[in-house]
Picture 1 (cartoon, rainbow, N blue to C red):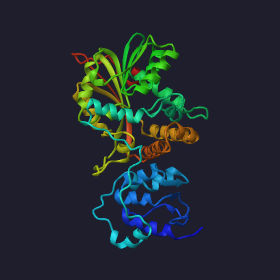
Picture 2: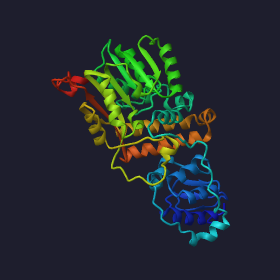
Picture 3: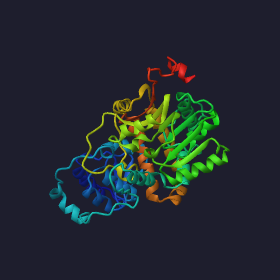
Picture 4: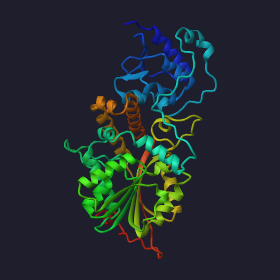
Length: 424
């Protein structure tokens, strides 16, 4: 295998272009290698990957090359992403590319050229940000990938939010942790037989069915994803819960079915956006009985960094228009809508473990996942879930459950005075 041929030139190019040392070993399309040994190998299959980085010298350019299959990682993906964190989690502001110093190598390697088209998996939404039509587009592009694909990733529980890992034994798995999360939500909401629960952003209906089956409540679940709704209705019917659970394709802004005894919003608020958040919380407030509780389960930014000028990988490939804010902002907006916040529980480490389990599921059935979607789509999910697991582990993002109550006019909350009391 030739050493220090094209790979050595690529190492110099990348370090100049990205303004940071390359912390992994490189293998070029001619088989040559350069860089530190004993690290994961960044395999550059095609010079087009470098052309993408010339035009987009940030995480989006790197992601486009990975999604298209022009680069790959050989070795531990988590280790590679940790070493490349500066490229994955923040976009360096490049004010002038050092082209002159490496112009000869760029020409010889045929890297200079027109900007390559983005991979077809890149998402594009149109219309006014967070309008009903645009929100429906964003949700559809993320969730209508195929229910069988999601079943590979999520497992039989079909729960697409942070699990709650309470067990430690070898027989305790993702399905157990998701069941424990669903039950934690139901207990926090103090669900009782005969009550009405509104599940906003109900996904594939897992929480709605758990609440109906285990607590005897009547549930209305709403989603903007037609594929989710069809799948959820089928599961509800098979479980014999059609008399207790209704699943609709409906925007939260069109709700007029209250009052409900309790409301759950699990992994939904990230899609709402910061500006419309108070309106969202006020709508939930108006749908809730006095003394009723709302449980908001939401990813949060921790020490948020200033946004770059371009699109991020997450916005372009995973959650168009998704927004993360600090937990303090979320609590303030919930209270501004009229709620009294009674409890906040951080589950950051739980989400890291959940994401690693999802990545393992995807990798274990990789060939079928590719057949069900595309190689690029499977690579998007693998990259975003692995990078997100590290972001949770390293404290860049968190996830929290916020329990709030709509108090009575006299201030009564109808809640026991201790946490043990309302979790019993």
